[in-house]
Image (cartoon, rainbow, N blue to C red; front, side, top):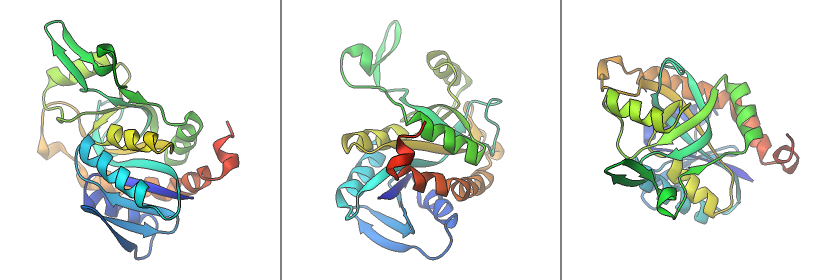
Length: 235
């Protein structure tokens, strides 16, 4: 079985594929282009959870060989100083942080409304293996539809999700599609900026993309190995 990696934009896709070396084979998907190298298929599915879910679902449904793992990957903002710029985060929980309802008493997650779900938990053994191989911090990663731009919003997110390490825009959408196909999911992020007031001059996108390439270079054997039945059931 193969590994499907879903990023938001082509520059993230290319950062991942650089880790594998060589020239990728390209495969056309509806609205996206998949790059294939070895056991890895990497697709830039678009920004936000809806685009990510659609791209993941199309890739899973179009596969001629089954996928054994789906990885949401890219750069993201982090709740520093726990996760400094250029560091790596692997999600112990993939959380839909703004899926729910706004009320006079505050935000209610979709689960409090009596339907849906607001988080997915990647396989703990896989999270541990990837964290060890990449030198990544394990912890909750929040999926938001609107990138945080104020200290007040950053504080509110941390209050609602204690221990959250980072935020991005695609993980929950990728996880939703993977879950419906009954394929395990993982989220791996390289930190490009701090969550909070937008300061473009302080962003380190190039450093984060380089860290993403190194992370996949180090974790490729772990991700490939997870497709083997014995690795999936080893604690």
